[in-house]
Length: 191
Ligand SMILES: C[S@@+](CC[C@H](N)C(=O)[O-])C[C@H]1O[C@@H](n2cnc3c(N)ncnc32)[C@H](O)[C@@H]1O
Image 1 (spheres, helix red, strand yellow):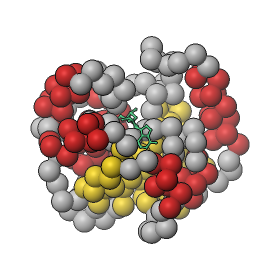
Image 2 (image 1 turned 60 degrees about the horizontal axis):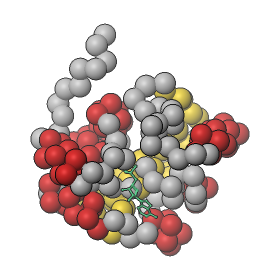
Image 3 (image 1 turned 30 degrees about the horizontal axis):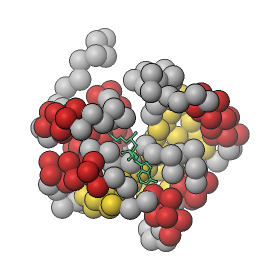
Image 4 (image 1 turned 180 degrees about the vertical axis):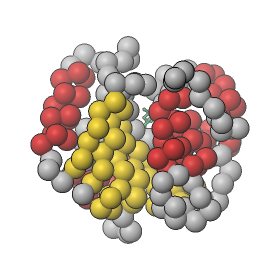
């Protein structure tokens, strides 16, 4: 198996990647994570999807490419410059781009729960984790990346990551699989 061969990359991907490099944005999700997101997204027909931390939309493009026509995605980002890149290249009525502070957004959210959450910002992952799991449906996916040491981790981040993994493992209502692949992915399903 050649796992470096990633096929059917979303058509917007290269344009977004170029804009991402121009902005010197270094926190973008990689191709492997994208491919996994697309595959898992396709398992939730008519699903409600949430992404926390749109960035420039690289992972957004992958998630969208796995959605069926009845699904919808809400993606939250607090940096206008970044989310504008995503909006420019991903033109799809199934996607709602929200320029907001995810801390406030998660706390205020009281609508239908989600089938799939890609938590790629501090809020929803290291902060407000319980609140985020609360808005995930039973049987829903909660996916996180960057769980293996990364060159851009600030001092002390590794301890934070380990504490977070311990927290995930202690919750008996969550089934988790840790993948030593890509940037370190954890797939969680809520019972
Ligand atoms: C790891 S990056 C996301 C990368 C993106 N998912 C991709 O595929 O390239 C984390 C993002 O979260 C955003 N962010 C950080 N704090 C936030 C907050 N409080 N509310 C909303 N977005 C936030 C950052 O601006 C950054 O774009």
